[in-house]
Length: 608
Image 1 (tube, helix red, strand yellow):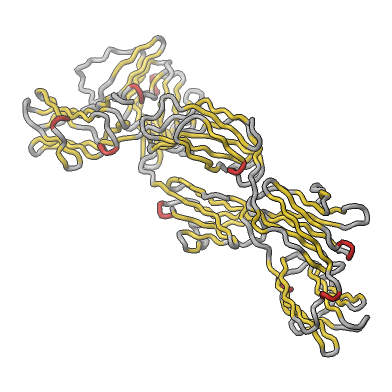
Image 2: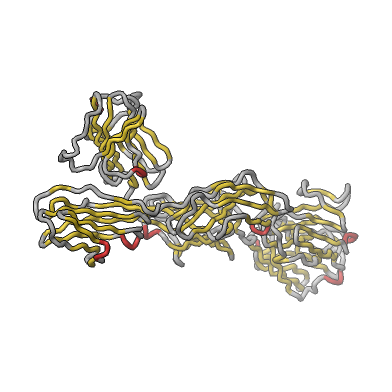
């Protein structure tokens, strides 16, 4: 890239300055920019300036009527409005410095020789970018569409990815790209996938459980990551492929549950002989245990005591009151009103024990319950809460980059379909409108910006209970859709030759419209319209004389212009003609091309 020279064609006009500068000039960073003007009189001294500031004399030269400005190895700081002044006459061009996107790394390979780790190797792009750059490694769980950044690496070579780098157990794919101040290269994907298991830590461990005879015993723990585990009862592993089962026929029944980070084991209707049972849980990095105790009659609360109990929705609630006399009647009340039995509330009496049972507790079951007999009462304060909400995805900060008018979707997955969430932008709660759409679909919560503007950028949060997911949205205002060509292109061809007109855009999804002499073209076997990533082409497989004319590639208010001239045979070019564009005739076997002012490395429109 270094040492290239970008020259410009001049326009002949009347006045002290005969040949003026073009309206604008695009130069790649690191190239040499050369600006030329011609004056009416020889030997006069003009003045070169950029954005109103005079340029150093060392960059200027003149010979006779010609005046030149040479800017070697331009950088982005050299961009601006360059002006040549002579007396009261002046000519100006807009110098734009464009950056070259880094190339893709090569020789990417994956090795799975170590347990719960994967070794990734690659080599730097050839040639390597001349500006400072890093490698960005990303992961994707198989079956998901999202890529999440893992590491930023300064040197090429190898990196080992352990299981602790993933949020949950699964099969993962990896890809890598080169990132510099000029942009990001295309990604290269490592072949294959690797099964990784994160090392969990205990957030809330198992606790000893005390229940009465016939009640359910619930053991639960919370882990730091989503991972499968194994439950044990008295040292015997419980089968994980049967969520509901029995230790042996006629013995204790159990049910295992996993919701996000929480694991639960429920022992149904435990008996007195189950007292002292040891419950254990094991997974990579975690081992924990707790004991089951069946309370004796002397452990029941006295009738004068008030017991406060907290449950989670869908839990089985059993309130037990033991009287001093067998088979003596008692009445249950809730918030002062006598309760009525139903499928959702049952009252049972067994000897001295009176029980009120809620098979599946709901939030509205919260309140004060009273067991009353002959002026003596036992009180129970019951609180039923929804289980804590956990965010399943994303587990890391998400960065979103888009351009104006693009649709941006922020997605958050929770562990319960009925879990409420709130969206915030820059600390303020987001309300739905024509410009912001909030979607709920099962466990998925989405914030959609249908047509983004620069003001839509900011810090977004999805808040679910005590957990938050963070998103940073950056919206870039696109000032120009067309990357190439930056000026008018002249193409000459001989009848029956193949002609290709090429236009490069800044975004692959952008739509263009091709016209010829002001009328939209229609695709046919004699005229093909092609679309490949950011490149749009108009192809004339066998050009005819009537195909001559002015072709435009339009998008929004921008156009790329091509002037096609078709002849029966090539005519010799008179170097002294008054054509304002500098034309060069290139001849190769079976291929002829006539080009305008564009340098060789940017010539993509022509005949084949």
